[in-house]
Length: 78
Image (tube, rainbow, N blue to C red):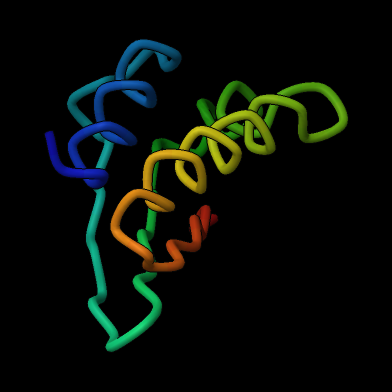
């Protein structure tokens, strides 16, 4: 499973409008950036209280990406 698909699956499970979840990946040599965009009313669900949900998603992403010796950054687009 690709990391992009992993983030998309997690995000769709959290939001009320899963059809509006958009995930894009920008590949770099050592670092990749995954951009997550959701509906405006679902933004709070993705970020969570005090950013806990977003932090948890980033932790999962860094753990999964460490296998590939690559750094992956999650950007949440408002």
